[in-house]
Length: 265
Image 1 (cartoon, rainbow, N blue to C red):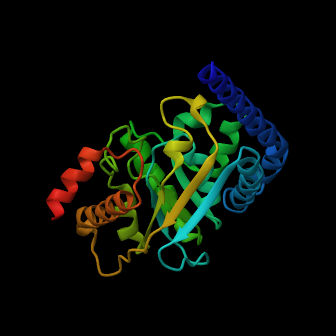
Image 2: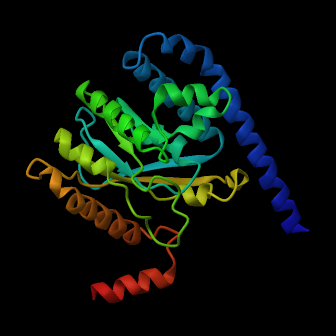
């Protein structure tokens, strides 16, 4: 009986959270439409601030506490290529809490097809169709242009959800080649609890609690060449993997932790 009651309460909580999500989105939507006429750069920055306003309302109302940890001081006035692990539908909402500075995420083109939300999404991000080489090249060209305007970019280097029991999926090359081409430092950021708050299996898995964001040390690229992209990718991957294990990310299997420990020691 108690289990059925808890399941019912959890379902009602998810309905409540989704209604709030849509209500706040509809509240800012007219302003997003107006901001879109200001152009890709100025208008995009305005839309990003509106998304920040949305997240500042929604997260407290659904009882999710955002906790930030800085392993080294973070300079918000500095440009970066941010790279973040990707394991939850909630990552897209958390990113506007994580990056309180002008930024453009690289996101999947399919998400832009959702009514209303898709319009906001398309205006706030750079979309990519990973199944098309031509589209991937075009997306990188747009990201280079955005970096030249003094705006940071965010890439989920795994591309899609990590559905394994390991810390990370294999990384794509794009973010690391872009960093080397533009001499822009890499800043890894970890989303530690989005999987626990809402896993990738269903949208009805949202639950309240903490949501930690960890900002790792930046990785300079000034002494590297384009041909060093595999080395840079491996370096960032190993750092993020190590820290996800260190912070006990819940999706990592005990057997993986044990094997990794045996390799290290």
